[in-house]
Structures are given as structure tokens and as C-alpha cells.
Image (cartoon, rainbow, N blue to C red; front, side, top):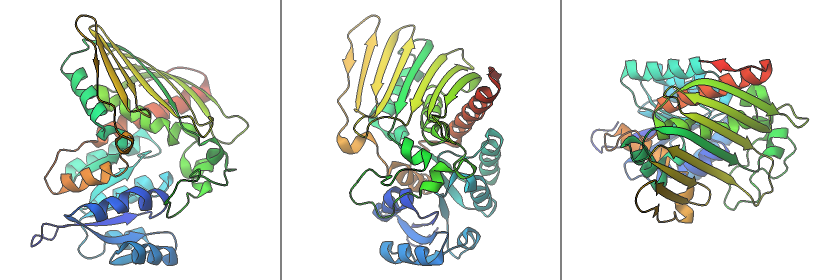
Length: 353
């Protein structure tokens, strides 16, 4: 970090669709951060991104980026198959890391990265925008202070229209969104050797981390069934999860919905109250068994999915200005669920962790 200006110099590994849509604009927006370097698989693409967004350096080799002069922190926004290798190299060379979801391919890899960051005294943030909404933060506070009593059951329905992307047949992955600098590479989502899997890695990774974010608990047992819908990747997922505190979780997710429909409904049932969140609609309601129900102020459209929030928090955390809003422990919990779910579906049996 440049001590004379209190400025954090950040590099971005994998300067593609999501990095140029969320992370890089966030870095540029933050008054105490500087976009030091970007990396892409081709030097030409990296140089174009560097020119358009004002980065000092462009690389086609992530190791050269990490070892470049004056770099303090790294955003790992590459394809999932590269997350572990790139994050580990960055941490080993003294760089703070923000890592995209899915954090890794396996729970063991996630644990190793988390342990390494702790050993080196480095900040390590998991990029999950849902962890930064007003409703999500308040929901976690209510649960932790016991407003709902003992949490007995959580029901989650999460959908997002990405099935054609997962199948490799989507000709418009961003569904016509305005202002997209780089379109997603379809192969990055449809090839399981690159993406890890389909819906379970692409979308359930959000919901699995959110369970840990809300409850602070780890999975104890997982039973799962997938439907691949004639694809190489799973398109439909149902999971039954038991947490280490005894909470029962039902999680259903699919990418096969019309473009106009997105669901992310989280229902938390406790012994003293019920909490109902609809994340895509930006609503939250609390119903105590005794007392008056509370309907929280709906989120604005910009608040519903705060895509820049992870990198903005990451910068503040590195500068000592804020606590980590999405620590790596949530990524470990998510990867334990994902890994166990894949094994459960393949072997048609419950997995105890």
C-alpha cells in the first residue's frame, strides 16, 4: 500500500464479464483504491481492458501480475477451475485476496486457502453481493440475538434464468443487459471441467454461502438429487441439509425459468418467530409468535443485488476501515455443501460431514 497516499493498489485476475461489470468499476469508484493491473488470457484483451479502464499494467500471465511492483491486493475473478491455484499463489506472495464464487472446486481447497490467509495475516473476502444488503445484515442480527429463538428450519427457493448458458446454447448470456463491456464466455459455464458443474456451482454456491452467512453454522449432513435435463451440467437441484446446530434446511434451485422470473425466497422458522425474505424482490418480514409483525422498508432496485459491494468492502477491509462482510468461512461451508451434494447425487445416499 502506498503509505504516502493511503491508497490500495489492486490487480484483477480474469478481467472478463463479471470483473469488468462489477469489480473493476468498484475499484475505480473507491477514492482510496487504484487499478494497478489487469490480467486476461490474451495480452491483446488485457491491454484493451487496461486502456479502457485506466490500469497501469496489462498481463496475460497471472503470476506476473501478482509479482508486479507495488501491488497490494488481488481480485480473483477468473473461471472456477483457476480460483484455488491463483488465490493460493497470491496469498503465498503476500497479497490480500477477494475471490469470486464458487470459491474452489472442493471443500479441502477452500479450507487450505482460508488457513493460508490466516497464517499470513492477510485479508480474504468471498465475493457474495447478497451478504451486503440491508435486509441480509439485519436478518443475521435478528437470528444472532435470538429474536427468532432456536432456528429449526430454513426453506430456500433460488432460480435464475441461466439454463441455456449452462447447456452452452445461449446466444445472449446477459439477456440483453445494457452496458455489458464483455459478454460471458459460454464455455466458462457449460464445460464442467472449467465451471465445476452447472447450477450447483453457479447458483447454489450463492445460497449455500448465504446459509452460513445467516446462521454461522456449518453443514453436518447433505442429501441431494440433480436433474441434468439432457445436459452435461445439472440444471435442477434439490438438497436436504442438516446443520451442526440441528437446523433442517430445504434448498431447491434451477436455472430453467423464463427470462422474466427470478426467485430467491428464504424462509427462516424459529421457536419464537418466522423471518421471510424475498431477495430478488427486496422484501423482508418478521413475524414473532408474540408481538407485532414488522415489514422492513423494501430495498431499492440498486440495493437488491449490490454487485460492487464485495470489492468496495474488500478495499475497506484491506485499509482497516471496515470489518469483513463476507469472510472465507462462508465459502468453506458452501463448498462442503456443494461437494457433499455432488457425491450424494452420484451415489444416491446421504453424506455425513
